[in-house]
Amino acid sequence: MAEEEPVETGPAYAVPLVEDVVFPLREEILTAAYEGTTTAEAKFRAGLEKDAAKAAEEEGGDGLAVPEKNLTFGEISFKNLFDLLNLCKSKTEIYPAETVVVDCGSGLGKQVIGAALLDSWLKVCGVELLESYDTMAQAALEKFKAGVETMDESVPRCADVALQKGNFVDEVAGLCGENAAIVCALSPVFQADQLTALCTALQGLKMGSLLITMTRAAPDVEYWNPICVQKMECPWGTATVFIHSKFKMPPVEE
Image (cartoon, rainbow, N blue to C red):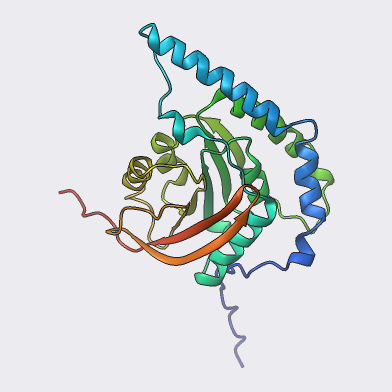
């Protein structure tokens, strides 16, 4: 009797994580990466940078690349991120080993490092416009990477965790490439024009990819279908979370 050939299996899709398994160990790792870093210091440095940009603009130089109202600091907690990614997993099949996670306006990088602690993603990256935030975020990321080898075996390892300075509208498509992606635009102050520009940048994103926004839904209903709308208690108040799925590709140019 001929031996049966082994059946090839594809990558497993992710199931929602159990809170007791994740906390407190992974939260402690995240907290350790930011030891000595305070939100007050971050806001102070950002304020100086914004003032310098305004002064330069008044003298005929370059000002801020986006309106200042889009740069208000507002982090979500590690528990918020945990709940958000679990919510995504409960609404659609997600394959972390084939998925890129991008945080738009990544601030101090906590959502980036936090996401890296929650699954073995193909890549996790953040894009931040303000140099003051990016400098502090890079320091935390280096501290996190230095401790990866000593982390408990139960903690996921991502192949690539990175932060970069720039305008996420310009960078996001290149970071996602042809991969499935979860794109997070989690600031509650992003305006409609900025979200419109983000959606335009993501038109070529792989179908089934997710876009998560807060307070405002994605304005582009031609390519993005809202699959979940839910209230979430954040450190700074209650926010409405919108999870959208990419269901259409732009026409192929001849």
